[in-house]
Length: 413
Image (cartoon, rainbow, N blue to C red; front, side, top):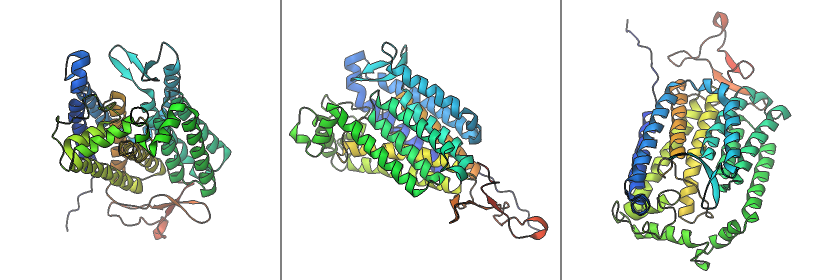
């Protein structure tokens, strides 16, 4: 008789290695992009390097902790976390409390340590919606479920726009809409809500003169090369000057006073300048890997809550990366948003790494066996895969009856 050892679950090492690689690349690129400015402002070219390395270390510790914590425990934190984030977003708008820079109030600061509440808002929204939609998928169209979803998303997005930070607000809306769709939204309601969100974004975009100027110059940045089109033109120069293999790490020219925000919003242009088309393609492939592994985790998640966590976090990281790279390549109108794991910023890096830890925990809890994601039958009821044993065989019902399928009324949320 052959002895069978129990199959053990493990973390998604591919996803883990991809995220660590992006983080290490980000530390190197921040040092290269910020050295000159740090030397001019604080007389220390390694100033931003030190802070980025510190935030990366703290973020990796948070990621490891999140990897080991059962994601179901976040249900108890969903509402308190949203309340705390709303309070922080309001505090940012209070004169004398929020720190203004570049015409925007987005930070809270205590000594040398700063916090950007909008970054925490992304994770808070995911935690809330995963906990809210998970056990309520059968009542998704009811007023009692729909209204809190719209209110929480709307409040977080509106407070972010007030900073102003339209780019982050768009990411928040994209996260919310994706999770609502994955939860099983009716297409008619989803389409109406998506149309309303699009109209709202366009209205906000044309409400301020500087945003309207960005939209006008998007089609032809050279119509205002020293004004609204300046950053777009310099970003394109950065990508073009690098050629196929780049000018060499540290040897880029656009960061020397030409490119605004070279180590935050525009770091992808510096990356293209220094490690060329080959380097940018590697970064794009790594984010594709995050998308693939995140979708795989969502598909095999053992319950709706896990699938929603995976879908929300994957949407956040991949969509935000796409927006940042598309802005640098002048594929979408200019908006300020960081490149996950690569741009300078403690709040963005730490919260992003913690989110990856949650995603890894969802994958570990799901195990290696791929199962169908929760879906809907034509009668509107949710369907869950049959319970299975460790060998993947369907577990029989009482007294040898047919395999028992878990309908949503008995499924875990």
